[in-house]
Image 1 (spheres, rainbow, N blue to C red):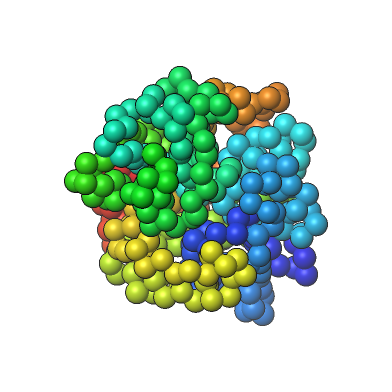
Image 2 (tube, rainbow, N blue to C red):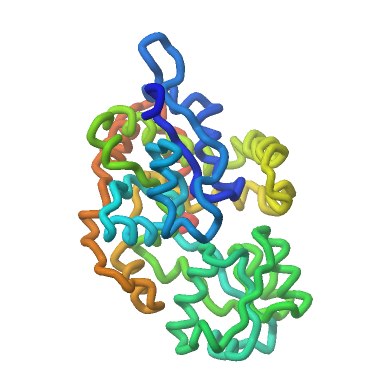
Amino acid sequence: MLDGKLRIAPTCYHVLHLMPVMSAHEMNFFYDEGLKTADGSLAYQILRDPMVPFGLEKLGISQAMKEKSVDIALDVQSRTIFFQRARGADVYIIAGWRNQHTAAWVGPPHIKSLKDLKGKRVGISDFNSIRHWGIQIQLRKAGLDIERDVEWVRCGVSTHLLVEALRSGKVECAPVSGHMAASLQKEGCNVLVVPKDQYPNGRPERIIAATGKILEERPDLVKSFLKGLIRSYWFVRDMPKNFDYLYNLDKRLRLTTPDPEERIHNANRYTPLGLESMPFPLDGLATGFEDMLREEELIGGLNFKVPAIEEVCAQDLVTEAYKELRGRKELDAEYQRVRAVAERCGY
């Protein structure tokens, strides 16, 4: 803690990744759940700038947290923390962030299966992104060499850019949302794989990490943070009730981000259907590590001695936080609404 405040920062530069934490802040969830000082002021600070350049978090996250005195890191890839813990870093997985892979991989009419992508161009949002990670796994499962058999094409973060690249023939495969995949099917495209159907136990794409120091010294503040974050997960997926607020929050955040691509507000992304299907776990837990590690080994990403899951995860506080929230009658109606959404989405 610096100046007595819990310091929270994003790993990634994507504006979308700020939505839950800023919602929790502006809706006073953090404050109401105990992140306040004895005199009533805020006991936390949210840093807006990403800690490391995109794609370099695997090597740099723990050092970035140290240099910036960050206690809690948002939106970290789970494999990053396994790599860091293998090197003795004082950082642990304390909760889930994106706990399912939601994109469907779609190809034009002449691409019938992933095997047909040999020698073809595959669209991704960014190198070392979740989508890049996900399709590498699927291509390996299909028997392709991800270094030689396909050409990777960065199309940009927004879904509409990936769809445009697919429709124009710039790429012969691209990841899109489930409802967009259904629309493209009507145009004659083929859905090559729906990853979320393959992970019934969840897929810890991105997680929340914290230093061992803050977990040992101020677990009370960490639990207050987690209660506020879980409430924000519910808030984001409670549609259409909270849609107008979140739509405008995105516009406000994009006005102040320095990256030119991220300054573009994509109205097509922000729909009630899109927000309620965000894979924020309603109980806050990160799950599915066994499948993740098995697939990471498949793509050659485990070139180090992998520590045991229990040596990397410290999710006791998020379990307690969820239990306490579920025990409050005034929150039950909201929870029941989002639980119905989660059952419909499958996560």
